[in-house]
Image (cartoon, rainbow over all chains, first blue to last red; front, side):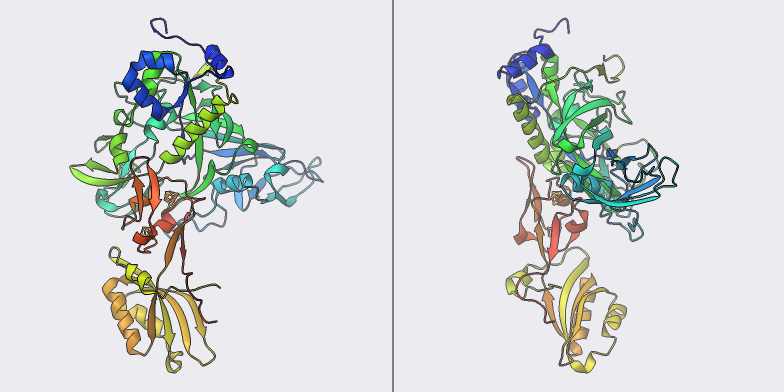
Length: 393
Length: 163
Ligand code: SF4
Ligand code: SF4
């Protein structure tokens, strides 16, 4: 930024981290710092702002290589604790997806289904040190004659396990209500008829992409906290939509940007990757992500100073509109209102509950802060920026 | 099977009606003269209640003991119980106790949207999700709603069923 009063580089910030001089604060703390001192002074004082989010994130999973067996096997179908994994990659490479239910799950036959075990739970169990039953079937070839394998494997037995989440960290999300006349069970939780309750799923001011709305510092190669270990942003996520409607401050008021992230599963922990069962919907995984944002200039200070009251989302009907792709909303609410537990929709007071954990998001921001302060974590400049909003490079 | 019950009055007092559908668990003691009659089916048919037999035993002296979950409108459940008492069945209400596994709970707050008594609520100052067992009515709504099954039902308190 040519016309900025404060200008810092990644190298300078990393040098300050190395020297033990870096000032690192959480995105919650930054709200007050910017409010009191203004963005220029805040940018002078603060080097890094840490963010965090912990909530169910579909489009998550893991690539696993389970090692060659004797005799050799080219797996055609694979199950981990009865959860099917995708095997059409190579001989013993598989992908286990978070939303895959166990093959014998009754699904929604008894409605609303409980969906007790799925791919997310397999990943959590591996991290918790449990043994997983791996079953594989093959058609047999001259180089891979084995037809069938059944074995117990733990994370330590796997030569390679990489968490790869093609879409995490949604930058804002809808607030859900149900205006139909029956109770519905959705990925946004249980919604009572006639708009009697509402749910939302974002950590608001703590959420990573809310603090860098135009992806100035978060891009390909950004080093992050992922599932309790270290991971990287490796692309923009599926459904990434930087052109979404935005507030004057830059934060989108609709679901917008997303991130593809990955990292070595073996460095992660069951505390920060949890199998999740959404009644009537299915299984998925709660993922903990934390992203450090370098305060390169006063513009980044202003962005990270965003507060819940500045972040707005739309109220969407999941009783009819969502399933039928009707593009309509029932007004807008901000995260200060959402976090108060009550919003107003169509002139009526509606109780609202979160699905995203603020307590855990804050804990992630604090852990990341500690890693940086202890000089165990340095920032990386993006190799390639993510696609941003039109006219916003 | 360690099925047990909570006979103390304090727990019973806490059981309150929640919404229109009423689910309660009862310990029934059948006198030996009627253990061979299809009483439970009559109960379901005549009083429009759903039931779930959690445990049933015939004791050596031919007295029957059953732990039964009854679900329906409160008035129907009460009428059904009167019917049972009229047949000489001794009815005792069992309190279910709900607890939270603090290790599993990840403080999302989803349960606070459906808890009818405010036993699960959010402290707004820091968005911590708190559970106050004293306020819990045992309705069980949070058990299947919690994404990580952190809320657990147990009947286990003082004493076990006679085997
Ligand atoms: S829904 Fe479950 S995990 Fe979420 S706060 Fe309630 S008890 Fe905890
Ligand atoms: S069982 Fe769960 S939802 Fe029902 S009152 Fe108790 S805590 Fe609330």
